[in-house]
Image (cartoon, rainbow, N blue to C red; front, side):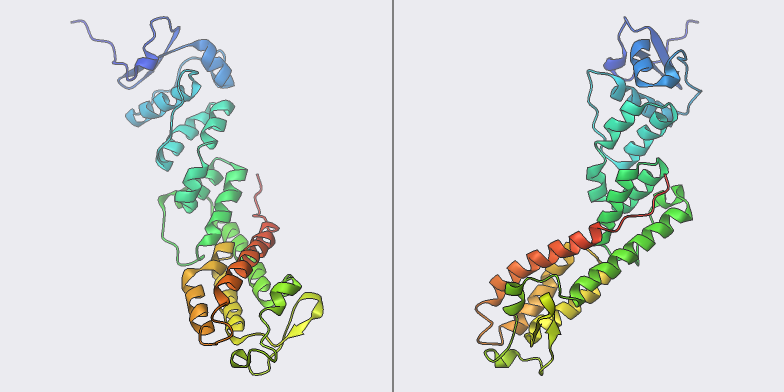
Length: 290
């Protein structure tokens, strides 16, 4: 009895003029040797793949789509990313890896810890750093388990924790040492002889050019609370946390002199504050040894 040939998955790989067939379990992929040679030194002179599993057939199809000039595949999940990048790295397909990496940013936004693990596994240095930076928006602990943690060594997780802690320490310092605040921003939060109801009991704070002021009590409280939060989430978005600002506004509107100006003044100030936090943490880099 004549046995039917294995079916073809996609018309893209059903070209009768193709000069090589990559065969997986139950699936044939008709391809051009020239394209495979250009995409991978591994295939330059070698045109057979090891006997894969049925799962590998999906990986091969996606991989070949990245090699084909007539197709621009879109990766929808991190599982797909890993499925395709693993053979691309294995077979030294530098161009394919580059195309995959171009789609990586959206996954860093969606699932930064998973993205961090996958980027570390395949030694994608820039993507490891970007994912670590994105994770600054979340507390270090508690953090739910993700399956990709099994892909990385303990060293990778330890360095992520060290990086997060160092950024937290630096960001907290921004909220406790005020030398970065310009004169105009600093002076407008002074209670002084005008805003008696916002006096903080005579406590002074020192900032720009060693200038000391008796700051408004609600602003002092805001900075103290922000310092604590920045240790946990060392990023610019933390200083604009809606819950934190609403609490500050509720305090400020109790003062007849502050209630009409606090919203505008804090919007301007938190913009500068966030920028300073981002500038400070940007000077800290993750320890990556590849």
